[in-house]
Amino acid sequence: MIEDIIEKLIRTEKRISEEKGDFNLFGLFKRTDLEGAWDIIISASWLSENKREDLTYIIGEIKKDLLVEDLRLLARIVLIKPEDNLIKKLNMAIEIQHGKTEMINTEINGIKLAHVYLITSKR
Image (cartoon, rainbow, N blue to C red):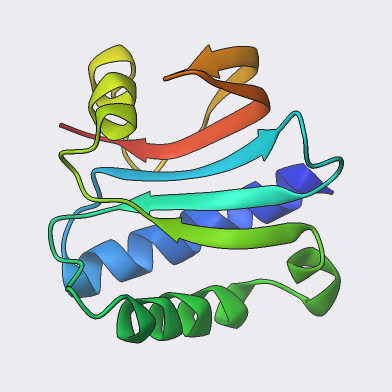
């Protein structure tokens, strides 16, 4: 099921990047403290100071590709500035664009993660 969601999110990420510009990071993160729920972490220089507007746009784009049952697996969407240490560390460690890289049982910037799928990680 998560593999299907990843493929759909790859389409979403690519469509948004063609319209708005490249992402520094677009990924799906499963924390060890949230059983079964995934966070979408997004970072891009084109994100504005108006997070509500950006979130509304991104949610609308995600809903074009994901089914209601897919959305139930998502806990939240987190927008992070490109200069954040987490983003910088991921960008330095992995470079990928419009694809899929998987990490299991890892710790990044002091955050324990059960599972990560990076769709884009670009400096």
